[in-house]
Amino acid sequence: MVKDNEKTNHLLTTGTSNHCFLNKENNRLLQLKRSHPEMHQIFLEAFEQQKGHADD
Image (tube, rainbow, N blue to C red; front, side):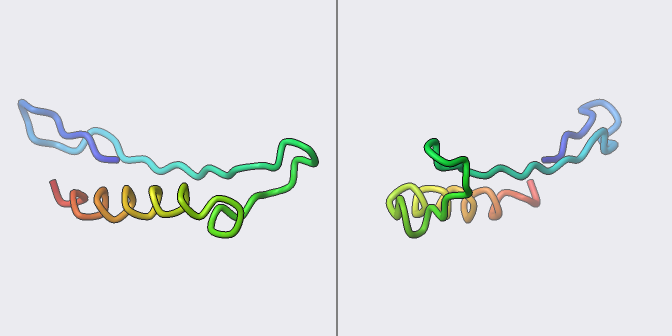
């Protein structure tokens, strides 16, 4: 994520974030690709779309 100052056009901040999904029964990591393929596809599409706007 990048935020520019509108007046000076200087970079103010950058950041990243990492997230995971856990199985609620045993608190182990879920592999969305295997356990919820439709959700995995939604995240992939959103990631690709966001990647295309990285230069904005």
